[in-house]
Image (cartoon, rainbow, N blue to C red):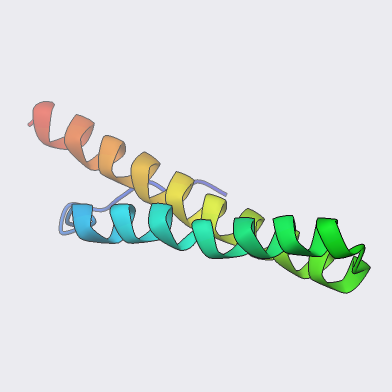
Length: 74
C-alpha cells in the first residue's frame, strides 16, 4: 500500500502542523495530572491522544516533504 501524493496534491499548511504540535500539550498535561493522581483511565486516554496527535504531525510533515520532493523533480 503506497500512499504517494498525486500531481494535484498541495502542501499541508504550516498552521495545521503548528496546531497539532500545540494540541499535544493538552493531553501531556492530562497525562501529568493522571500520573499524579494515579488515575489509570486518564493515563490511558491521554496516551492515546498523544499518539494520535503525534501520528497527525508525522503524516503532515512526511506529506509536505514528499510534495516538495515531487515538485523539485518536475
